[in-house]
Image 1 (cartoon, one colour):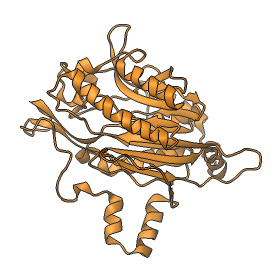
Image 2 (spheres, rainbow, N blue to C red):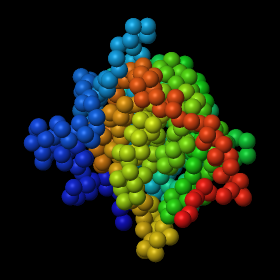
Image 3 (cartoon, rainbow, N blue to C red):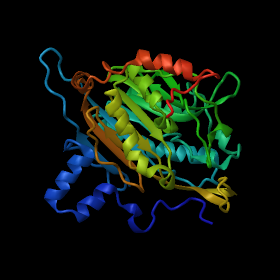
Length: 388
C-alpha cells in the first residue's frame, strides 16, 4: 500500500475548468464565456517566479473594478492564499511530518512577501494531514498545539514580523484551559504578535466529515480583525454552507473574509466556485476560498457510513483556490492537483462602492428577520404556511 498518496491522477482530473475552456473554445467565444462565468476580466500581475526546483504553481492578478474617488485615496492591498499537499507519509513520526510541511510553506510565504503580499492565508489545518476522517485519536491529536505558543504559531509570528505582513494560520488548537481541541485560525499581526483567533463555528457531521470526534463548535463568535491592511475575518470550511455565518462577518464590518477549507472532489466540487463568490456578492466584501490539495493515505482503513468498503483515503482534495470581489468578479482558480500560491491586488474601496451601488445592506430588513428568527427557534413555532 502506498501510504503517502499520489497527487497525480489520470484523465481530465489534472485539468482546471479554465484549461478545459481554453483548450476547446475559439478566442471570441472563450472571451464571452469567461465574462459570463467570471465577471470582469482581471489583469495578470507581473511577479517574480519561484526559484527552480520549487514545485508550486504561482499566479497573480490585479482585480480592479473600483472607481477613483475624490475624497478617499485607493486602499490597495495584496492578498496571498496558499494550497498545499502534505510532504511525508502519514506513517512517519508526527514531528517530522509537521516540520517537513513547515519547511515547504516557509518558501511559499517568503515568495509571497517578495511579491508584495500584505496578508497571507493558509489552508485549513495546514501543518498536518486531514486525519479527522479516520476518527482515530492517536497519533493525530499530537498535532494539536497551543494557539499562542505552539511551534506553528511561533514560526508564523517570525515570518509576519520579518515581512511586516498579516498571516492567517489555521491549526488544530489544544486549549490550555482544559485540553479541549478546536479547529482554529490564528491571526498574526504585522508586529509578529497574535492579534486573535477564530474557532470554526459549524462542525460537519456527514460521512467522513465526523469532525466532532476531535473538536468542539467555536465559542468566539464572528470576530473581525482590524489590521493595517483592512478588516479581515475567517469562515472556516463547512461554515461556507451557512449564509448567516457569512452575514455576521459582514455585520461586524469585514472587508476580506478567508475561507480556509479541506473538501473533496466527489463531495463538493460543483458547489466550490459558487459559495464564496456568492458570499462576496451578498455581503459586499472580498472572499478568499482556499482548499487543500492532494490525496492523503492513512495506515488504517476506515468506513464512511455509506455501505461501501473500508478505505485508506478520504478522497482527492481538489485545490482550485480562488479570490472573489464584491461585484462578483473572481480570479481563475489554482490547479486541482498540486501546491499553489495565488496573489490578488485589490482595492478595499470597492466594498463600500458596491454597497452604494446595489444597496444590499440598506435593503436587508434585518429587523424583520431578527424577529422571525427569534420566533423560529422556539419549540412551539408554527411555520407561516397558507394552505388551500
